[in-house]
Amino acid sequence: MQVAETVDEHPAVLVTGGAGYIGSHAALALLDAGRRVIVLDNLVTGFRRAVPEVAVFVEGDIADDALVRALLAEHGVGAIMHFAGSVVVAESVENPLKYYDNNTARSRSLIASALAGGVRHFIFSSTAAVYGVPSDEPVDESWPTRPANPYGTSKLMTETMLRDAAAAHGFNYGALRYFNVAGADPAGRAGQSTQGATNLIKAAVEVATGKRDSLAIFGDDWPTPDGTGVRDYIHVSDLVAAHIALLDRLEVETATSHVLNSGYGRGVSVREVIAAVERASGKPLPCHVAPRRPGDIAQMVANSDALGATIDWRPRFADLDAIVAHALHWERTIGAQLAD
Ligand code: UFG
Image 1 (tube, rainbow, N blue to C red):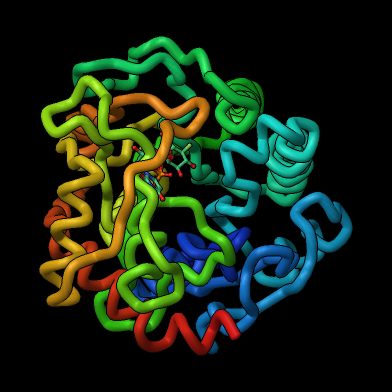
Image 2: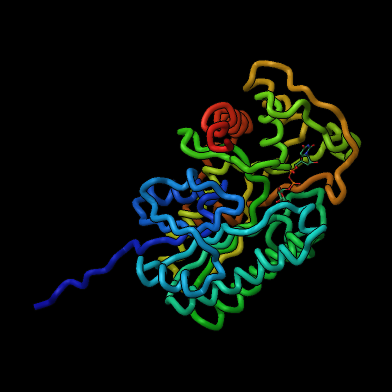
């Protein structure tokens, strides 16, 4: 008699940095997709309350080998989504070794633990900062990787480790190179609670809710249509949906890894963001022109054709007004409580 083999189609997923901005959205999306979720976060920048209640939460560090190996075994983890790390570009210039420690050395430990624990799939949050060299045209994945700061280098080194480890040890991975991530869960369950955030949409909604006096426009003399910086803002819920679709893909095509830009391929200026915040809040946004920020570039937009061609993903919130409205809603309500 033939006995049907029992296969757990969806082994548990370890989400590092799952108490942080993008990681907490990923944990929710995985749970929505019916996955078991284990969150590992050291709570240095994350918030315990950001972790969904039904996820298993472990407070600890990705480089604590004994802890990580024990939890991989205990929970039968089959895949890792790795969000933990440091993300402030200017800080990486002032304190590069912190970035090579948090983003590179500790990722190396995590990858080693993953190998030891038989984890088959790994998704890494990489960044457009790996490119470094500005471009007037949308940037595709073949664009040279010459990071302009230690943040970008620290992430690129982890991409490189994954590439080489996957070739040697037979697991597969996806590295998603995020462009400018913004917005919040449309259902209001999660959002960005980062203290002292430097990113534009977060800063703008903090001004709109009276938490900051005025938004600094870092330069209005860039070679762009309205003189302000142009970026490719992607809604955090679309971004984490791409992670889920990519994981599905890695589980099916187990011999193939992917490095993919994550953006919409559409440039938006600082002034366009300000106008969207004014539409969402229904009042003028106090702002002032300030000097260019050191290291800033005029424009960075993704060519994300490969993302759409590789995974089963169609963006649902590729609309600046939706991104800003969700960010503002979070800032007004739950975000205020979380950041207490
Ligand atoms: N900006 C302002 N005022 C602010 C904040 C930002 O005018 O208060 C402008 C910037 O000059 C830039 C644009 O808004 O033109 C976007 O700036 P962000 O700080 O929001 O984002 P960056 O493009 O500088 O950096 C982001 C991520 C980095 C990542 C990078 C990859 O924050 O982690 O994209 O390209 F490395």
